[in-house]
Length: 431
Image (cartoon, rainbow, N blue to C red; front, side):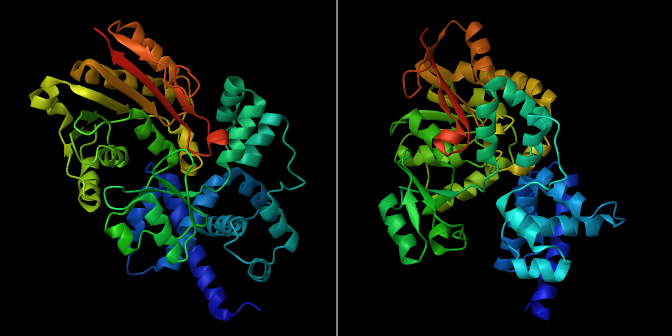
């Protein structure tokens, strides 16, 4: 039986989840940042279990949005309910899909059939839902905008597009990076196992760990002491492919929160200099905190507008990383809310911005220095097309083949790599 206190707790959690869901849907801010701000503002109100339930429910609601809407329409045909109640019921379906609500609670409280709970768990569409085309079926089943599916089918073919969608609809694994300035990866794995957390070393990155189950490892002394960071294996591989050497001068142009800068510093053993800039200067505040925690002291945050004044910039950099602002289509498994906020026109605007950043970075590259252009996008418009246009107007640059089998580019295709989608092109200044 479902106890009264359990019933009250679940109703309370679903009420809050409904409010959060409505808030994020109306806001352009990413769901993870929205939730972080919300939990900080209400830090005395919610414990770790509440935060876990709420965050996992919200992400499941975005990940399976159209699939859950199909079931919502079947369960609540022509129902006249207010917006908050609708959001609460929708979040209930998301929680059930994620296994956060038991079968017994689902049936007892909301008087919904046991078959519906089973269908949600097995990811089966209602019998009444009958899409007109394969692409429309994919849009409902995998919960993606139809225009994006049509775009990917045209670019990759139906089979590969469906593989990509199938990967993104899965709940992503929690991937960490060992901070080798403080601890080896093997010792970090051993430490987690002593605490009952099963972690395996990533196969391709030399620094990554994959947790077998999602646990709150960020509320630990090990994290507070800077022994590890949250970072997808694909992001780690971009830094690894750059092969930065101790003593080199590196510029991370779009450093953001500094995940790649921190790994580059660790690979360089804190030797040499990494200048970190970002178009949004406030982003560097987070990098400063993370660098202090990680014991990194060769990263120098700087104002991108004042680069001409820096002596190191005047001398030229050995390596420049442009991890460009992009659509993030390679990370839609990890950031499922983003797929509902991007538009087709956005891709065209981004290409102009990406080319502009490369233009601003190039003058500061030494002769025989290397310019690394990276995105977390699977779109050729942001990747190969940008590089092709940039090389066409800069004959002083030569493309360096960096693919694992001699291809021009290093690319990570999520269904094959098991990582976020990434693209990397390397250009050397030869004259």
